[in-house]
Amino acid sequence: MAAEIILATAEHAAELAPLVRQADRDEFMAASGQSPEEVLADGLALSSHTCAGLLDGRVVCMFGVAPMPGADGVGVPWMVGSERLDRCASVFLRRCRRSGMIRQMLDAYPVLMNAVDCRNTRAIAWLKWLGFSFGNPIPYGVAGLPFHVFEMRGSHV
Image (cartoon, rainbow, N blue to C red; front, side, top):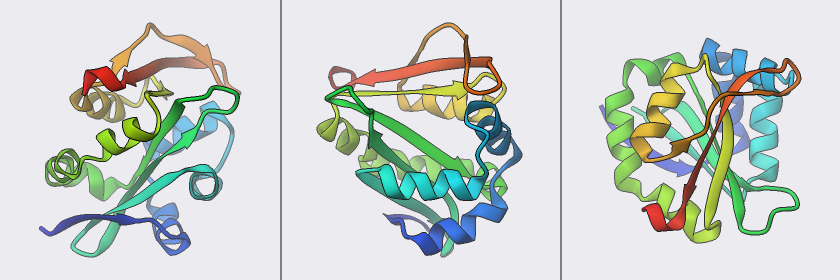
């Protein structure tokens, strides 16, 4: 399998939106009530870095980092994945680690912080593998469901 990480476009978002994994859809609804199309459009519009992960030329995820409003030096990392990403996670994860994307995000934002739905166990495992630290669950988003706040500081990489 050929894995690559490239600059994301609106075309990547359109390809990924109907393929978004159910755990991510559930997280979007709990956090903001938004559809995958809305979340991906916001990611492209608001992020300073946005990438598409491709396996064999097909989009399996998009990810990026956006500035946290009102918090200088804090970036909000995000990722949206497809079911195919789950089936080929090890290939993509190795490529992601080698790409240095986390280092690039931390170069732009000394602190990376966001929240993840406690039900999204694959995302939590991936974030832990990348080295993020986690807080205790808190009620979050429009649904008030338990989410973990996760973060990484530049000194951790």
